[in-house]
Image (cartoon, rainbow, N blue to C red):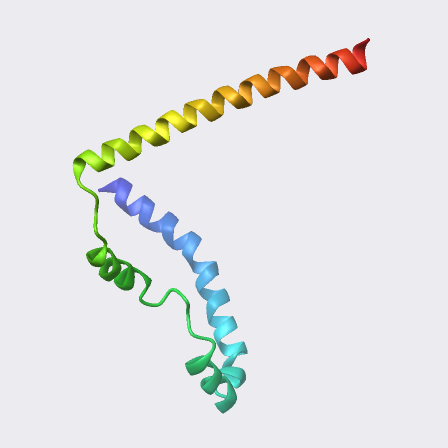
Amino acid sequence: MAKTKRFGKFKSLIKAPFVNIFKFLKKLTVPIRSNKAYKTARKSFLKSPFKGYFKESYAELKHVEWPDWKTSWKLTGTVIVFSVAFAVLTTFLDIGFEKLAKKIFLN
């Protein structure tokens, strides 16, 4: 119980300055927010791009046609094979360029 009380006091100490700052900013922007042009802009082009994002994403996931188990494993295997091949190619190119740079700059 004592830990909860101490944590509660600590949380309120951190939260208090921010609450005051937000109250100040809210009072400061009252003339702008009460303006009719601002309200119109807020309704039209200042809308939040994140509003309804999760709801729309979930609805979109319902329309997705997921591949069957066999196709998923084939595609996974293809990705692994090409990743390994690309890693090997990149490693050989790195070794080759390193030897070339040593030959040019150190000799």
